[in-house]
Image (tube, rainbow, N blue to C red; front, side, top):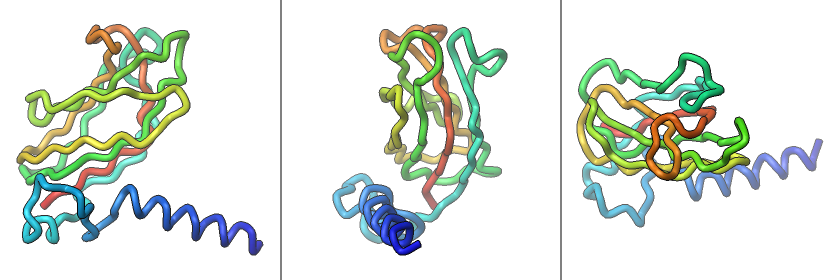
Length: 150
């Protein structure tokens, strides 16, 4: 029991250093002023565990988060993996209200992916694309989505 407690404490401390939660702010971020950064809160949290894109995910071509109203979005942190099918060359593309923001690699074993958004919007949509940009090329499993902003 003592080993589990030490592991959880260590995991929590390390996780907190790389992925601040609530009102904590990454001091290295220059996108948001200190005044507005102190108001950053968790706007949306989901554990969809959904496979999107490619040929093995069925009908799901994207995953969308609805914030319920237009809000300023500071960052999005997604936990995803590309352990589906024979290819492992997926990128996760994010759009806010239909406008492209960024696309980042998805690793076969899974990892946290951070998107710095820095704009207002209501709908955050995720697509799985192949590393060469082909929208039908590769699958991604999205395990968790956390959206931070004001």
